Image 1 (cartoon, rainbow, N blue to C red):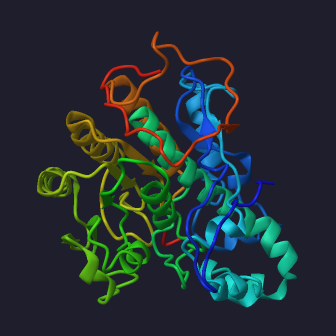
Image 2 (cartoon, helix red, strand yellow):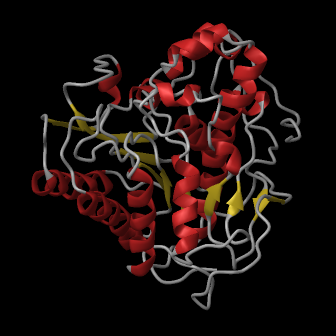
Length: 380
């Protein structure tokens, strides 16, 4: 269990970022900034099968990466669970209290039988995995600044805002990661969110609606959930797609608008929401992108970031088919082969790496180092 945030002052609803072990981490240079925990995976008497989302896909991604020898058990960073104090940096106390009602969680996750279960079980088997993924996104944000890139194998809960969840998103991990960086890391004052999940990212859009420090680019199917017109006001580059959009049109738009967004405003950090529910056949996404198209999409975004020397944090977000785990793993492997993400200085992946090692990180940390393109020390 994490030590609570120290010396944290907050109003009745939200707080400011204090000293926090989630971001106070140092990872050996031989370790890849890929964040994961076995706790991510949701297994609960088969109830998870009542939602089309593959609630065990994160562990499958790690399994495939191990098979390809990109990582080992000791070479990635183990995520820590976000505490209530961490969550209060963005969320209202009222919202977190509402999650103590199983009916509310059943509505957010779209798994109706959860409303019949004691909340302590729902907390342990559903919300704890989501809190751990949220902690992983916050950790990966700091790692991205330190290393130039980081991937949280989970996270990307882009439908959740400070006071409302939905679409299998109970915690606003993207908002939290950005807010932690703004308040804890010197030199991070502008962020760009590139949201390429099939659904509109209305959660972070509502949170940053009036925040000029955050530039949001969102590419999504215009006809599906959530259709949040109010939140759309926060989008600086809005790309609305039609049913069945295919690779050529999609990749052309992603490249055009990614380049345009990063040319328009140069951020200090990119948060890339890399949902795979754009895959052809996804029951909720309604698009027709091939596995190769998804891999190319991720390469386009990482290449744009690395060419400019901008740190990038990737979260995996939505994806409702069993084969999405294989595609995510293949994409990460491709990024490594292209030199867009790296291992240690010798290009080797370490055999042993202790994830989440405490570090005394003061609020006067130096600005992010330059980025090298070579090897470097539910409706979600």
